[in-house]
Image (cartoon, rainbow, N blue to C red; front, side, top):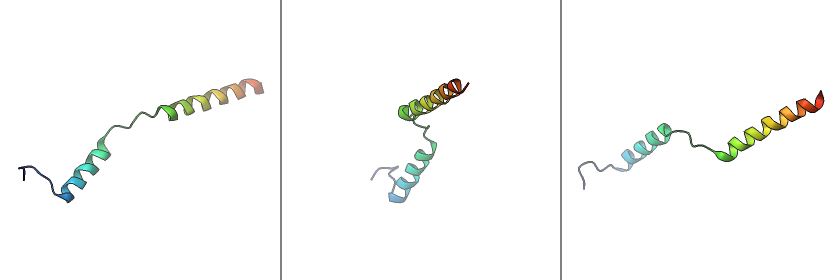
Length: 49
C-alpha cells in the first residue's frame, strides 16, 4: 500500500471535490441553440415592424 493511498471514502471525497471545482464545460450545441434563438427573435421583431 502506498503512502498516500486513499480508501473508498477518501476517493469519493476527492471525486466530489474535483467535480465541484472543475470549470464549466463549453457546450457547443447549447451555444448554437442560444445564438439561433436570439437570431430568430430579432428576425421576428424586424418582420413585425
